[in-house]
Image 1 (tube, rainbow, N blue to C red):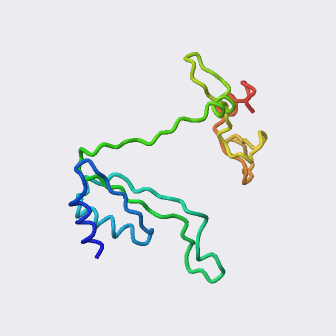
Image 2 (cartoon, rainbow, N blue to C red):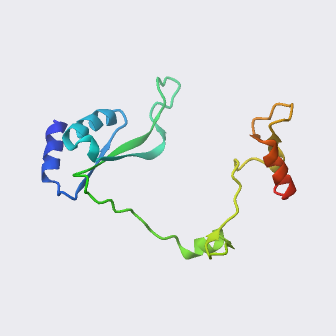
Image 3 (spheres, one colour):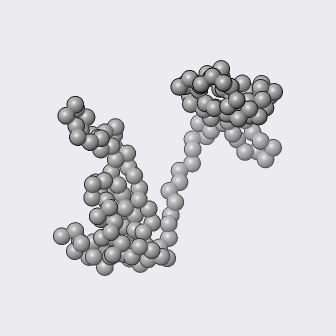
Length: 155
């Protein structure tokens, strides 16, 4: 029944049109094969994963699998020439001013940020050559990185 509907959708779709099919993760692989046969694999653009919530169903002690936490959108174009219009919304200027407080020589704003896990403290970085095993919250980094960070007072 779905195949007939998808064939009809392709027939009435403008040459510059595209199709977004919202489906459950248990059916997405079957529908992708069906759409590939109708639209052609070259018209496949993306599989978009839409996180709905943190695991619906299958959350009790009798669960036989992990909870389902996402749905799938299959994105197909009518033809190879179908344009893709990127969705864009500029950030709020107040947000930019408060979060990106530094400015480089070209006038671009940036912020300094910690690239390790948020809960880590400065003393959790350990060198690879240290004989002791790292704790669960530490990150292993090469000796030269630790030394260069120590020289620049980044630790």
